[in-house]
Image (cartoon, rainbow over all chains, first blue to last red):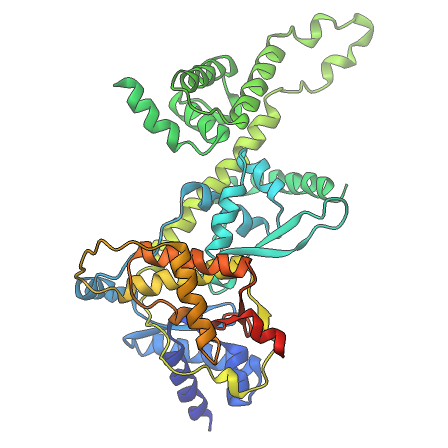
Length: 193
Length: 256
């Protein structure tokens, strides 16, 4: 039975393609617990890795995707010249980095850090489905709080937000910790004033 | 020629902080010990150049200019101990507040996120080396299961769906193409969509709405669809997150 579950999940991964297989959806289909589905899919991913198969299984959030291995990407490109997904502008990338590391975060806080208006960058990122509204600030103004999406994890090859690389060099880390905690306090004061 | 080079550079700055970091790097000075007079002079020269080139100077650049000038004048003020009274010797023991402090703090944070942005860009190109296929063409099983209530798709969801559509079309695009001198108008496309939607007994899947055609035609079609949504002639529904978006005539929903 257990091996069947793995095979069924592999089948569903194949069928779902680049839309990805959502653990909750697979859990409905198989009639087993969502947490167990995630566990099985992670096992399957490690097995693919250990057996050095042609395909790999990527996780982003509770979504899983079957892909080729990066080691062979040159061959894929020689074979098919796949279109490049649109590269983000510097402004969009900087804004996205702020949202990723500070989320949930308001437009005003983003603008404070970058020193420029963020309207366009936010519109671009929302349009590309990389960030979304995750709620509103309490208090006057009820500013929109932005968060990254599951798609963000996919586009930047992250299983979860915990995998975001640390921003600081180890040398600077201590100094920056003091720095950013002070910064965050200031921010909170502004937010909830 | 020099001006042209400058012009290219103007576009590449992401705001006053980015420009300042550039000037500091160019001057090869420590971010924690900025020679404000020198940097301010260069910054102002930059602003003047923007004026000469008749560029719109974003207000953010001007705010920074006044901040720099304020810091510069503050640093020109005589040191506190000039006034220090013999009776008040503790004053000397107080730490001197550096007027550059707030700016340095801001620059430091900005520099962090600039580095983080570069890190993200790297991850993005790394991710591009994994390839996946389009989902298999089978009817979504969600129709056989407990269906969540219909969700009316918002404008941003429609834009996301359009991005996805563009990506699919790019993937499926044939290597050769024929150039045709055909013209489309939004009105024609609105009529086409209206007819197709009304003639169809079932809601039409958005992704199957346009399977071929060039970019120009796709854009016109998409704008026509948005216009129809705006006029309440059609309504777009989605059965849940990530589900397909369906287009149907507004009247039909009213009969229900």
